[in-house]
Image 1 (spheres, rainbow, N blue to C red):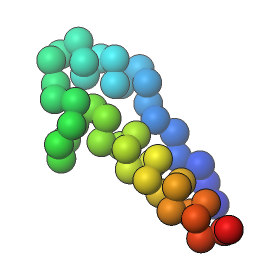
Image 2: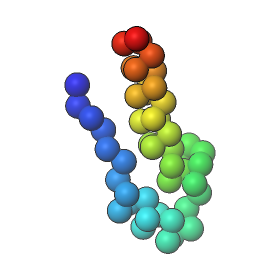
Image 3: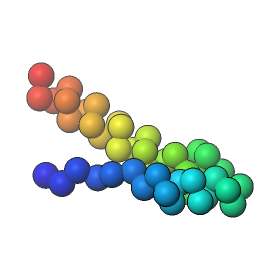
Length: 46
């Protein structure tokens, strides 16, 4: 299984461009998805 990583540089650039933080195309959406998947995976392994 590959570990996805949150692209901090892209997030900072998008933040400087006044992009939305949340929502379908939000800056934090990929991070929230990654965290949710990690939590679900950990829950299944217990």
